[in-house]
Amino acid sequence: MNAAKIIIAPSILAADFSRLADEIRRVEQAGADWIHCDIMDGHFVDNISFEPAIVALVRRNTKLPIDVHLMIEHADHYAPRFIKAGANSITVHVEPEAKHDVAKTLRAIRVAACRPGLTLNPATSF
Image (cartoon, rainbow, N blue to C red):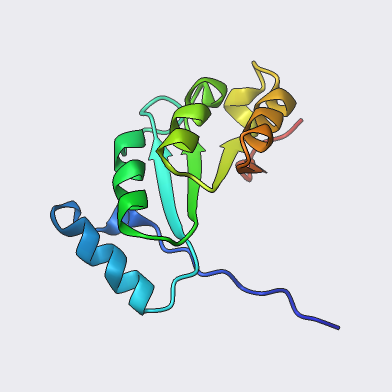
């Protein structure tokens, strides 16, 4: 029986953004498999992180896959911008998408040749 490969995907949220290229090289040298980008809008979660331009900057500095976690409202509207910026996979939350067609959002991500993912908060009930 083959064991599933563990993927190491450090988040750039903790990076020193004044030295982002160096920080990316550091995690590559440490053996990271992917680069993870936590995107927060100040609505779905209290914090605000960054926009597609930062993901594009990450893309210019690495060949590693970029995993984007959209902790935002209206992921259906913003996902194409992150795909264009260089995301290889995009995970959306089910909670804010409940007002929208989450299956349609996931299909659109897949059609754009990006890997879709769906997540939910532990307290979510249906």
